[in-house]
Image (cartoon, rainbow, N blue to C red; front, side, top):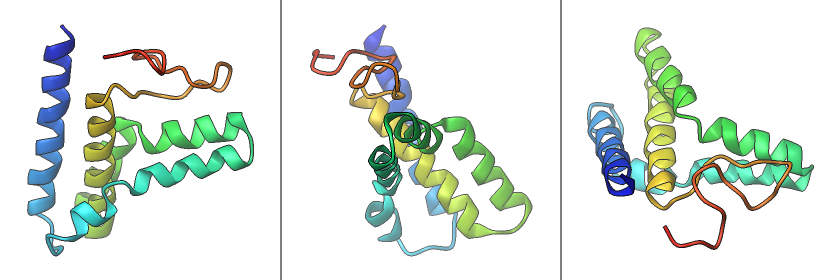
Length: 118
């Protein structure tokens, strides 16, 4: 089952690459900004709660889909770009076995405890 879930996540990464190819941006934009959602980890400088909240917001696929769709509906390609990057990055993290953060028990994710093999 783990393999099937990872394949699904890989498919979503490729979907994000395809959706990016339909946007009016240079090819280099995707790889340069692919890890930008990890800047949300800066929330941990304020507190564990704020860090987990900001990380989870920027790694939630519903936020990615909403941003992408709103960008299309409002004719704002930059907003669609944000959605595509969030989708691709969040799916990539899940391929690696990373998931949402839990402020009450740092280091644990719903997918697996940190430090365990996938």
